[in-house]
Image 1 (cartoon, one colour):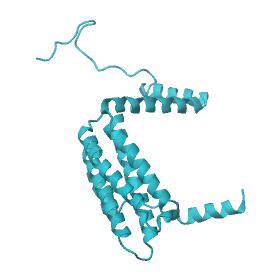
Image 2 (image 1 turned 90 degrees about the horizontal axis):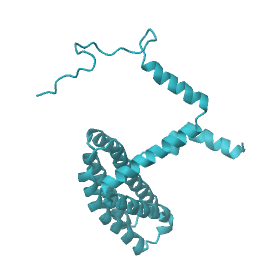
Image 3 (image 1 turned 180 degrees about the horizontal axis):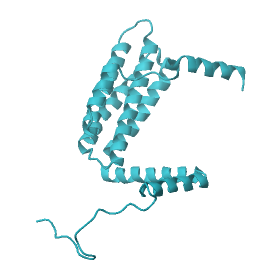
Length: 216
């Protein structure tokens, strides 16, 4: 390993904040935790995204020292919020949760976000080169997220399920046969009692073949 990379790894391990900066404030994180319903959580993230865009426009409207860095960081935070919106949506679809309301809110808000971002790009600020990459990332991610939100949620759910199944098979294909055998053995063991015998079904007064009456 080259000395440069060794020094870089030491720096990152010594200062974790350099590796990844939190894109939400502590109060925002708390609001996300409180929003357990995915539809509500999507609404909260949309609010945060709008706030970041408003802050970006305020920064660009002023000529002051450090503006370029502030705009770049806000754009990066905004993009991570958009990514979080997609993650919440996909997780909800994996659990077969209804996110019709949340997806509609996203589909309504993100075209406005995209228009704001493109307006900034078209205005060609004098320091654009300092945050041009971050701006393009924000535009690209917003467009992708917008298309996903507009898609039929039933079909999107099927696509997410297919993606999960594909990833599962890929993981299994990379897992050594011995480890897979051990995992299956552990699963079989969980179905047995402490004596090693298959767990017994709870006792019943019904004769073999006899079924309980359907609830009235």
